[in-house]
Structure formats: C-alpha cells, structure tokens
Length: 293
Image 1 (cartoon, rainbow, N blue to C red):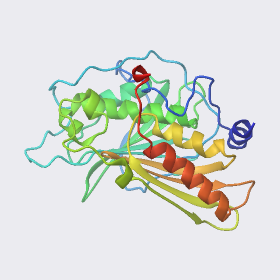
Image 2: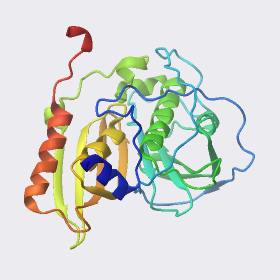
Image 3: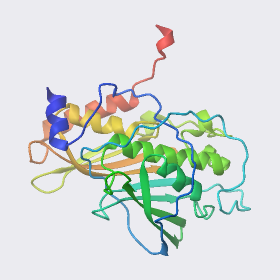
C-alpha cells in the first residue's frame, strides 16, 4: 500500500515487472535520419534537474550490444592525447518546461552525434534542437528532446534511464576508448575500467532541509544500469515523494540530487535515517548470482 501511495503522489508508474534489482535496460541500436526538425545553435546554459511524472515511451525492441570493436569516431575528434577524458551524461528536466534537455561531454572528442540522435529517435523521441558550447572542461552537446507522440518532455524515470543508457551505448560504439571510464565498459566495452569502484567507499548519502516543505537528498555511488529507476523506487517505497531531481553520470560514478518531502513537509530526522539506511543497504549489499542457489 505504501508503494502505491507514494507512486501516486509522484505521478510515477512502475509496471509489474519493475523490481529493485532490475535487469540491464534496453540497449537500442541507432538507425534512420533525424534532422527534419533539428536546429543547431551555440549557447551557454546550466545543468540540470529531473521532474518525475507519469509518462511512457512506446515499446522498442531490446538488443544487447556485443563487446565494442574499434570503429570510426562519430563525427568527432579522436584526439592525440594519452589522457582519456571522463564521459559525462546529464539529464535536465528543469531548464525547459516543454522539453527534456540532455547534455553529453567527452572532452573535445564529440562531433555532431548524428547517430546518437538517431538512436534517441528510435526510442520514440524527437530532437527539436541541438546546441553546442565550449568551456574549460571540453565540448558540450545539448539536445532538446520531446516525445514524438505527444510533443511533450519525457517524465517517466524508466524512460529517462533508457535515454541515459542509449547515450552511453553510443559512446561505447563510436568512442571505444570511453569504455575504460564507464561502468558498462566492463561488460560491453573494448577496454574494461582499470580499477573497480569500491561501492562502500564511493557511496555517500546526505539529507538536508531545503525550506519548510521539502528536503534535499544527495546520492553518490558507483554507476550501474537501472540505477535511476531503482533509486526512485526505494524512495517511494517508504512513502516519500520525489518532487524533482538531477541525475549525472560522471565516468564510473553516478551523482543524484532529489528534492523530497513527506506529506508536503520536510523530512523529519527519524525518517531521514530510515531513508538513508534503506538506500545504503540497497547500494552496498553484495550481489548474489541466482545460479548459486
């Protein structure tokens, strides 16, 4: 009953097949041309919040990509440096009321990302605008995305996770060197990360008051497929509502900020401890293979 109440307060929908330990989400292949409604401009903007409401993308075929092989760069710059930049994927639901903003950075190695935009279209999305800007951290590619069937922004956490993993999949395909800096590189990349992230050390959880009516939850942990969906489900399982949030993938790590409340008020100390304990248990518990039983 608590799950249903929490999901209702968020406007979220979890199917019967959704579990906390979800399987690897869809790795969707890129195809077809896209730029029928895309414009390219240069701008400077900030990142990034996710507002979660009920919404669904059309179903798509599921494919698991094989281990990446060296391929040509996706309209980008391979670079001659031995230092591989940290891939960053940001999902921003706050900057534009009418579109989901996705930002991708990989040093100065990214080009126009036509294949990435085609892959997003295969998820039932339209890329209505593409922006590029430069700063000291590299070249930032930003896409304004809407759902093809409604023309509105993407709001379901499962669909946002599908977008995130589709972008990472394309990074692995067209920039195989990125696999050494991504959690999925261990399974699908050309080069596995040199060091495995110690989850106990990497996991940080804090909650602070963010006014009288809500609290700010910060989560930093080792990245893995399905993490965004699982975090939201754990929070709502204890009847805490997620108002908005920010989800960043920075190399092997995932960093999330969620504005949360309990019945329209900031979370009191005892409930904060329950939430932190629930998240820490889920994020740091050892995984067990089903075949071992």
